[in-house]
Length: 359
Image 1 (tube, helix red, strand yellow):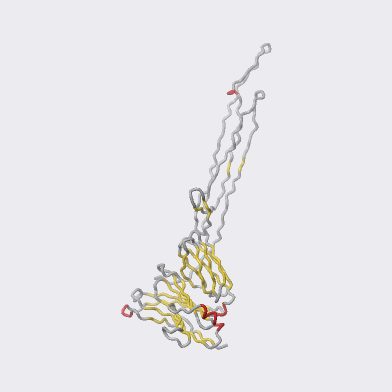
Image 2 (tube, one colour; image 1 turned 60 degrees about the vertical axis):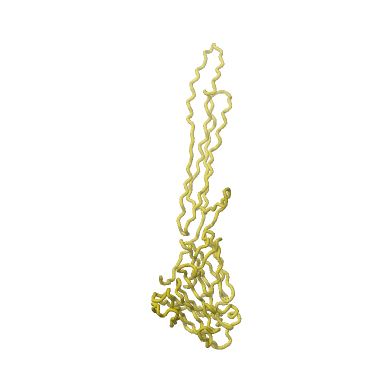
């Protein structure tokens, strides 16, 4: 299992340049050396419809060059035969056959200039309709209740696809539905919360939200990758393992405890059905709403299973105070042997306990 690391991402700005055709046309006047005969009709100007093929590109890739071929045509004009004048004493009328008349000079061919373009991908909806699709993911961030941020992601070219949310060092795996959309609620770890959604292949989106009630909450995060069987436990007051006030994944509490200032709430983030997914558990405590003295013991625990016994365990803790001060700790250790399967291992010193004075 690879060690969890913080990663950076360059966000690109995607643009679409539409091709512009320039038309140049020259025409010569009809020249005739004989009588008042009408000139033949001139050919219609050359036209050519150009359809740009669709192409879906990764962000930050250079645009392909689309060349438009120019078709040229021309006519060779034969020299008119010399017509000798008749003798002065002979009256004669000379009628020339049509083949002897000077043909009209054709207009110069139309020339289309070619420029570099970056095309918008297209998706065929049926045999007769083509709809342009902008594949750049878009994400909106809106501040919600209890210092959270609701993310709305629209990625029309990433259907049923896994992606990673990054926020202040916290990372977890999320997934779009069959239309490329997703909605995720994320506990904020900063008053000005910057969120990044990163897809495989380099696609991504960035959004920012200001969280007005951020200073009312303490937050603790435990994160890992894959099936590590670790969990974050918060022992509120005098709670012991399994008590009602032991807040963990099987007894997470609810948001109402945060709103009334009576206790904490735990939220697990990540798609554990995806192999090697990034997972995170976030415990939130309403420090700014507690009216009495309150102690919370925060510990990271790992269950010893047949899947992790004797194996390397990697995890990381992040703790954020209402002032925005952040502490992080990486953990790498070897789990006990398989004869200890079923036991829980307490990972010491991953978090600072919360001790709140009455107000």
